[in-house]
Structure formats: C-alpha cells, structure tokens
Image 1 (cartoon, rainbow, N blue to C red):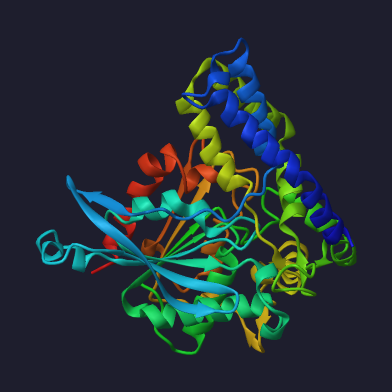
Image 2: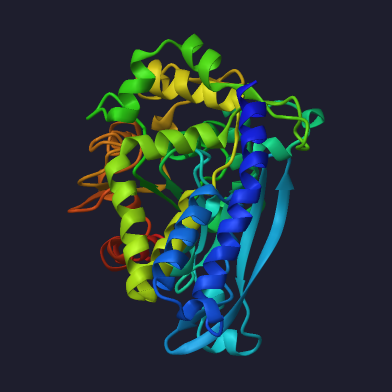
Length: 414
C-alpha cells in the first residue's frame, strides 16, 4: 500500500513541479522580459529549487560518446551484447577504424566492471568507465529496475546474481578478462570466480575489489549496524512492497527505490540541505558552473531503482547478518563457495580511508579467504582522504586510484 500511496503523491505533486519548472524558465531564461524585473534571479532560483526537489529522476544516460587517447579523439559506441531479465551486459566500443591499429587499441586489456545492484543505476560508474576507456576495452553490468521486469520472468535471488556474473565472464572470455567489482558486487563476484575455479573452469586474470562488504564484522558502519541489529522479518515487513499496476512489473515484491533514497538522504541530512541551499545561492549569484555541477550530481544521486525482494533479503541475511562468506558456510545452488580454490587470478583490493558504507578492513578481508593466490599476486591500497564514492569517481579516482588499477591490470595482462 505504501508504494501505491507514493505513486499517488507523485501524481498530485506533478502539476506543482511543472509549474515550478515553467516559473524558473520565465524568470531565468535569457530574452524573457520577466528576467529583467527586480528579484528575478531569486524567483528563478526558488522555482528551480522547488522543481528539482519535486521532480521525477529517470535513469540517466551514460553519455560517453568519445574518448581522448594520446591527444587523439576516438568515437565510443554503447552496445548491448547480452540481455538477461534483470541485467544487460554493455560494451563501450572505441571506434577508430584503421587508426585503431596505429595506437594499439586492439591489444588493450579487456575489463568487466560489475556495477552495484544497491539502489542506484550503473550510470553512477560513468566516471569509472570513461577513465578505464583510455587504456582498456570495457564492459559493464547494467542492472534493470525490478519494477520494469514482468512477474512472468520469475524471481531474482542472490544465487541468480552469481549465475549472471559467471555467464558474463564466460561470454567475454575469462582467459583474457580482468574483473572490477565496486561495492556490493565484490561478494557475488568472489562467489562466481570461486565456483568457476572449484569446477576447473578458466578464471579471470585478475580481480579488483573496491569498497565491498566481504566481511562486515570488520569496522562496522551505520549501514552494517542496521542490518545486523534488525531481524530479517523486520526488513521484509517494513521495506518490501508490491509494484503498483502502472509498471510492467506489477505485483512484483521489491525494495522500492524511493525508500532506499530516503535512507541515503537520512545518512547525511545536513550535507544535503546545505548542498541545496548552496545551489540556490549559486543560481542567485549567477554562478552557473557550480549550479551545473549540483545538477549533474543530483541527477545521478536521485535516480534510484527498485531491487527484487528475494535478492535484497538474501543479501541482508547472507552478507550482513550471518556472514556466510567469511565463515565458509555459503552454498550457491548446492555448491560451497570456497575462495581458497582460486589460484591463477591476481587480486587487488582498494579501500577508502573515510568510507562510511564499507568500513576499512571489510574488503581487505578477502586476502585471507583467497589463500590459494600466491602472496606476490595479492595487493592492497588504502586511499587516504577518500570516502566511499571517492575510490571510483571524481578526482581521487582519476589521480590516485586509477593509476594503481591500470598498472595492476597491465602487469597481469600478458
């Protein structure tokens, strides 16, 4: 019922947001006679702030159309290479025709970026992908909003997530592949590679695990504490709702994106309030660059998706409550997950010093589990001054993290 009430509230609010958008343009657009009246800048700023607080945020586009390599720009085309009910495997193809051979792009390592299924769309990793494209052939998992998946496609469990990763790795070709998992997918990626290794299948050349909850008993954060101190029935009773009739996934049980977004905002309400106030002030002063930066960030941050209920509850139970992976007790479709069976895959873990989502030590714990990987092929980096998002997006990612990731992959790409 809560989901239906949310949709009703959205419908009621829609005329106000349209009116606010129109007001912002009337008082702020160049050439509008209203832009010259006293106080017009404050009126336009106030209307736009109201519009952005009330509007719907759809999934943004990746918008990566070209990449510059050694001073030369090459077009980039986004391709869907494999589609599953709950995920698309995308390839960002760098096109250079004959010139591609001249710069050696065909020999660049192949990377699969496994994006989180934890509330935001995979476009949150746009900066990650764009940076990687300088030196790599890049694939990414693009998770589908569960409210858009018909009930006829069945449920989606954490076990299914693991199976998807296995299929994607096989499809691309494990022998020449490097896998980068960001946050939540470090757990299913480790499970997928462990199962493949135990069966004697080829495994990726390297794994890069960034800010993930391998062992949430290490430096528990506010997110970990909530999951650990509430019984599973509380999550199912309070956070799981049915998709309303106006979506293709009508009747599907999900953890709605709007509830997740409320949780995101509640973690740092003062920071978000200040950010919106600063946005208003920038608009009033005519500081368009900072205002545009605010829009870009919140266009991404406010765009959320619904997660399948089965997958979400599995994750809470297995990862955050029972800690089955680090305890060695996790079975996926009847097969025990044994990271110690991984032998021919190099490992790099990256943590942010100030990460308030996956605390320090949670990702690094994977090294003890992967005892079959030689010590000289296990590496770790802690990025000073970086929070959770800073290790895969922004200036620290580009200047501090990426050079280490690039050099690590290059070392094992031969």
